[in-house]
Amino acid sequence: MEEIPLSLIEILILRFGRIIGFLTPIVLGLALLIFFIGLARFILRADNENERRRGQQIMVWGIVALFVMTSIWGIVSFIGKNLLIEQGGTSRAPSVELPVFKVK
Image (cartoon, rainbow, N blue to C red; front, side):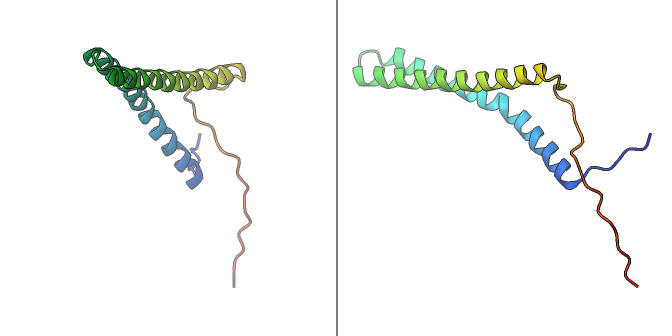
């Protein structure tokens, strides 16, 4: 079977998908790191009420970021499975064959 070359749009979509796939665990790790920074601030500066409150706010925002990211990830996975979309697969984008005119 002859392999059909990819169009520029398909190549850009594949590259964008790879970048997102690469960045997702990094961003999740950063959100977890932010939570732990807030936890450390909350524990290590327990004697200062303002610093404790700031650490608590950082922890809350870290948890919110983790919740939002994992929720979106789960919703996309759920929709993909219910629509019988193969996870991680590739698909061909629809295209239109343009006529070629020869100039004499």
